[in-house]
Image (cartoon, rainbow, N blue to C red; front, side, top):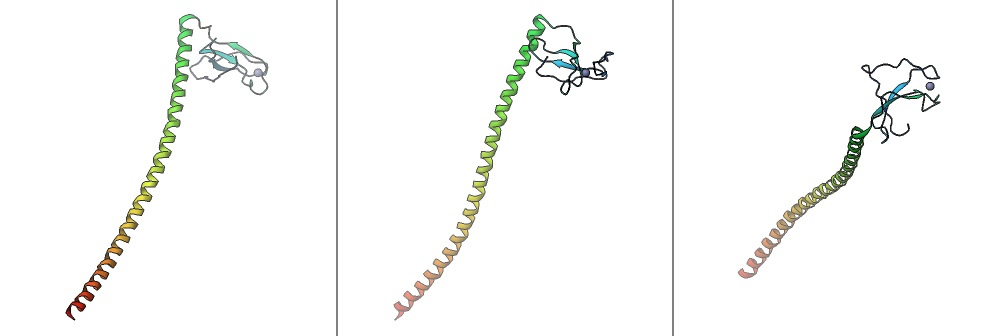
Length: 143
Ligand SMILES: [Zn+2]
């Protein structure tokens, strides 16, 4: 019974009266292997660090259509999770690109503002030069 294991012990579950070789109450897990999908079993709570070997089915074997349906739904769930992961990765790429574009827009707006100020300064200088040229022309014209 390797594979995906998850403890689902709750207060509403019937409590086992048996003990493993460690003298501990076994914990209730759920098998998600295709041979026994959703079937619960009792196992030594030390199974990951000094397993005494206690392992016993808690539920009767699931057979036929229910077993097929559980496996099909688990397969569909896995496919949806993979699709979600893929979409999350795509979303991260798009978000990163949007941040880069937003920064470029901020930079472009700063350049536009800077060029606008420079344009105002140059326009003012051109006006001064033009006024000076007109003054000189007027002086020569009146000579
Ligand atoms: Zn044990």
